[in-house]
Length: 186
Image (cartoon, rainbow, N blue to C red; front, side):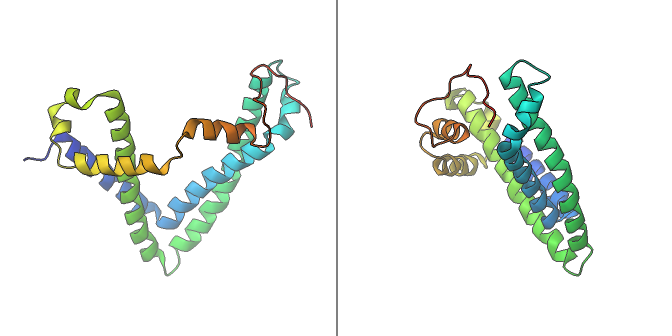
């Protein structure tokens, strides 16, 4: 059984991600993820503070809320990324720089495989198994990708979309939030 295009794509994406992470270093990669998480948390926690000011420029509550969250997210991402970049530069230039780059390679390889696993999940969802092209169906890596995808799906809550919406709306309220309810200033 020869290597198919899917196997080549998996190898290429994994190596590209691994080399990119090796050049950047593990600390920079992890701190970059932390920056995005911190920016998202800041936007989620602080958008109600900025929304009343945004309402002065638009009559739509949703636009004001989205704009407020986007502005806070971008500002927080820039500030936190600057701080984490300085920390990562310090680590890479230190005596543990080689270890940082080695761990970065491993992290990048794992990220590359995860990216292909998620892509395969969507592909399997869109294209049923009997209709998949031969280069996908006969790929040596397909069983591994499908197994990892099944494990990833099993880690999600049973009703993931409802759980996410419940958390975004605030789990303390028993009533659903009306789609057209005006924003409250608190």
